[in-house]
Image 1 (tube, each protein chain N blue to C red):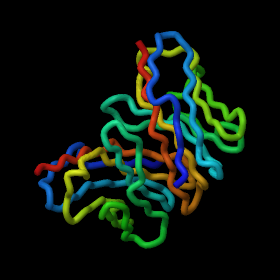
Image 2 (tube, each protein chain N blue to C red; image 1 turned 30 degrees about the vertical axis):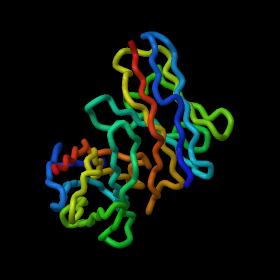
Image 3 (cartoon, helix red, strand yellow; image 1 turned 90 degrees about the horizontal axis):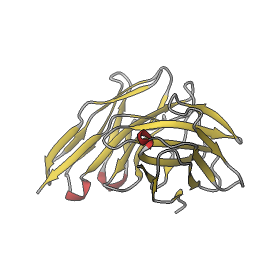
Image 4 (cartoon, rainbow over the protein chains, first blue to last red; image 1 turned 180 degrees about the horizontal axis):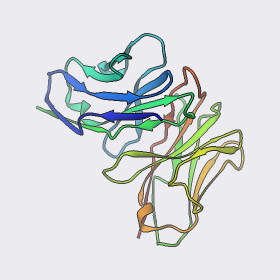
Length: 114
Length: 116
């Protein structure tokens, strides 16, 4: 079965410093992986996606993630945090052999201090 | 840019009442989903729908729940007799394609259901 583990429930960084949100997945088949962001009282917005092409994926707002099959990881990074990045971030996996539904991680709340 | 729209944005209902949450998926998408997020908890899968039938459902999606695509554009979630524990944000999503190299899902803004 597929699953996603986000290793940190809460991450706090200072504005201008790097962001690292960690995600590990479990999938018995080639997965598709996504990062979604949810700002307070808003819906879920796609940040970036990996669907078996380039392993380093660039998304919106300067975020990127690297798919590492050997480590079963898909960590989200950004070189320099901005106050507007404060939000909840979800790592999501889906895969053909387990049906098409998206499986969500527990979420990581990112706080950005001035 | 096409988007998934959900109505209403917020619904308050009394315990035991029926509610219908409405969604308009992106027009050329083929796969439709409902998820829910209880306050402070993770986003949980409820049901997926393809070719006018349920393709998968979770344990949460019991006989109190049903989905329908009545007119080829709307996608609805009905809760027949609401319980306090049904209070949550409900998200509708649609997707063009599942399978190898599957596309991303587009989510609506959500309907916040409060059962009192």
